[in-house]
Image (cartoon, rainbow, N blue to C red; front, side, top):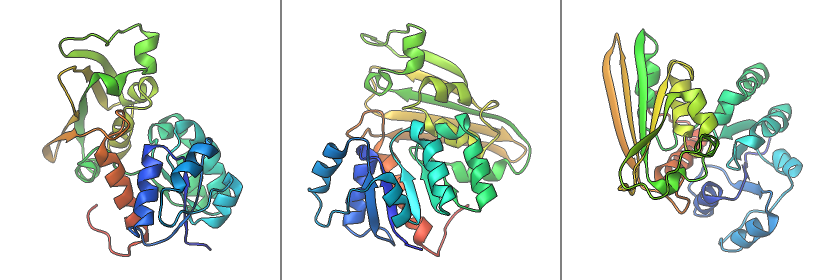
Length: 267
């Protein structure tokens, strides 16, 4: 089997992975990239010292041992069918899609293919996973974000919640992680990761605050149970895409390295 890495999507995360691969940061080569915007992807590939080929999805699956989704949650079910059907592993960046399509998790277990869901812009998942081996009373997450990071969110549009022109912080959502991911699909993959690591998307509470004074995406996680109390605070500087923090790309790059590294540190 080929040990190449196939990247699906060439947005900010896809480009970060391609740059990392171009400098040899992974323990395997980049087999290729597929994207719905071929012209844009090909243009970016020419900026690399050793650009991998642009491939159609079927070719990419055949050339790779690990497929990485960076194209959005809408591609996850189709990509999972293609990857697992060919006996290939899959890394999903749009983790919220796993809440809408839990069958993807079932397919991975049924086929024996590995399904990876990186921590992304969040920290403390190892502690949450450990804590949830025992009784946990609550898992709560508060995300405070700049206005630009929340613009265009379906929940805000559907509920006619204006955030342009805000002069002070405003809570715009509070509910389950499942509903947070549905209403903010480009913003709250972190809450999906927290819920899957912990007590599930329906018992995990998420509140979202739009704050015009912020320049960073801030997350506060609180977990309380028989183990004690866990609190995590993250301030993530946005990347070229204001909806995606720099830590997200760094986490994914490290996750890919770990796939091919026989030494594993942490839970």
